[in-house]
Every structure is written in C-alpha cells, then in structure tokens.
Image 1 (cartoon, rainbow, N blue to C red):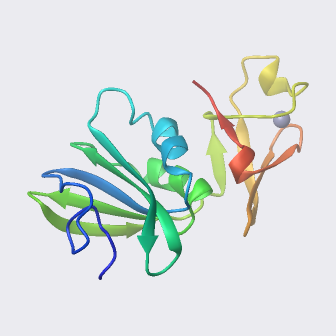
Image 2: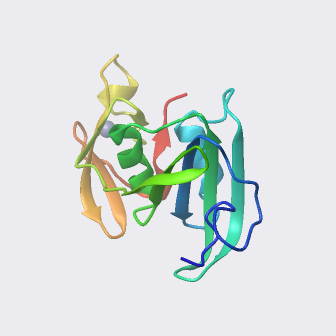
Image 3: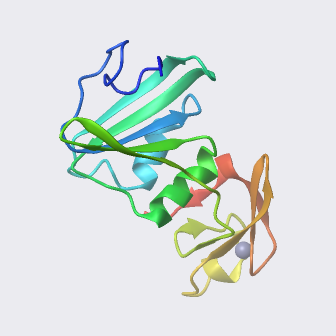
Length: 157
Ligand SMILES: [Zn+2]
C-alpha cells in the first residue's frame, strides 16, 4: 500500500477528504470523462488527479468526491471506461470499504447509439447497449447492432 490513495498513505499530493469516495486506478486521461459521466461535476467538491505515479500501472488518474457515495450501477458504469478501477469509501478520514468494479452485461438508457439511423436516435426509445467484449471493452446496440469501443461510447446530457 504505497500508492497515492488521495493522501491517505504516503505520497500526499492531494488533501484527504472526511467523507466521500476516492475512485482510484483509472487509466490516464479518463478521470474528467468519468466524473462528467457520473454527474460529479455539478455541485460536489471534486478533486481530480491526472497522470499520478502508480506502482501497479505506471500512471493513473484518480477522482475524489466529497460527501458522495456511488451506487452499484454507477460503479459498473465506471468499469466500462476503467475495468481496473477501485472505489474507496471514506468515512471520518478512514478507508471503510474498497470495492472492485465490474463491467455490466447491459447498459440501459444512458448511453447514446452512435448510429444516426438507429431507432433510439429517431424515436423516444431508451437505448440498450450490450457488452460484446470485455478486453478491450466493446458494446453493441441491442436494436441496430452497431458496435463501439468503450472509449468512443457517448452518454446523454
Ligand atoms: Zn443503435
């Protein structure tokens, strides 16, 4: 445990938080995108670390958000972009829980199909994206079969 876990361990680069969530081990360059996808940028205190040194992965991104805890559904959305991510729950400055994320089989309603002719882009039909590959992560539209890599997946809003 000598990695930078948001200042909880040695290598303090960002101040610790009292209560909230530290999303760790994100691939470099993905933190802002993930924070936006989760709607963390609206109102909450968010600290984003980019290209931090990681003993395991070389470089990593990290997100710290105060007074916000993630649902299982939000954790599985993180997994689409960062299958190796860990979600650390902090209470009273203590790490109380460390969760691994897992890639969901289906993502409903929030992703946008990249096929302009897809029914989900023409009619008020909720999207339904199926995971067709986990390494690398690829999703396919349930309705039109259009495939996208995780990094090209777009979300509503
Ligand atoms: Zn589609």
